[in-house]
Amino acid sequence: MSDIKKAIILAAGYGTRFLPITKALPKEMLPLVDKPVIQCIVEEVVQSGIREIILVTGKSKRAIEDHFDDTPELESFLETKGKGALAEKIRAISSLASFAYIRQKEPLGSGHAALQAQHITGDEPVAVMGGDDVMVGKTPALAQLLEVYKTYRAPVAALRRVPREKAHKYGIIAGKEVAPRVWKITGSVEKPDAKDAPSDLMVLVKYIFTPELFRYLAEVRPVPNGEISIPPAIDAYVKDGGACYGYEVEGEYYDCGDKLGYMRAVVDFGLAHQEIGEQFRAYLTERHEDL
Image (cartoon, rainbow, N blue to C red; front, side, top):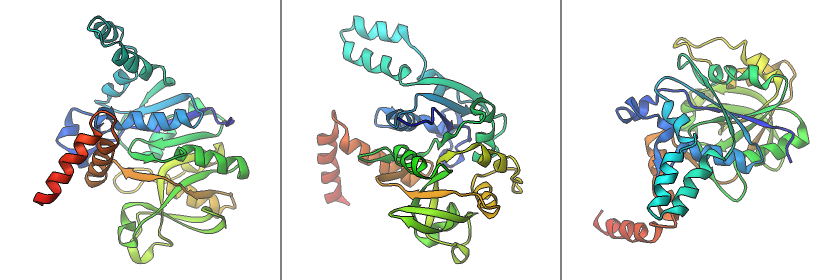
């Protein structure tokens, strides 16, 4: 059992890459067949042993709160229609965890969003999760990070390999491998040019934060568009002698904040879906012959 009891999930951005659908619908509520992306993130947290979740949301994000709220009228309606199993499935969503909500008044980046919840976590280590990075595997990605934290008792970041020509989209770390898949981070750069990238290891928005790292995050200067990101805080922290680790998480990764990444997830979740998977596979096979 982890000694980390709380997780912060960052779900406050406008989702401009998905406009116009995100004009009225939070991007975190985009469906993977019949389950919103944000529920996949919450389930990863819960399956990792954490049941206290702080959701940092923003304007027009009320649908996220509604999704995790009790819905006795809907459940009662389903039961009267003989759909008790579906009613129980809906009821289970609100029982996944204990939820608290904080609104980020302006979308000023993931680092700024994480800072909005610091007063709740205080001097505790805490998991920090983005609302877009979905992973599927034998062991939840967050649970993998928690195991690394147990060993090193220091901040931990989830890492994935990325082609260098795509480094400009992500935070990239420099470091030394100290155990299989475990890296001691010596530097972190936000969205470097390919020629300047210190490695091919990108940082997902899946972290274990310590109170010390929050203090560095609070000192990060915004970039010209006003946003504060997390990798510069890691860079400053390790350059001051702080120990920080990265772990190459295992599992299938879907960047659901990107249109192509999201569509990959839609297809794979559809193929794995108990109700429609077989028929969907047949349909894709048929379509493949026509392409």
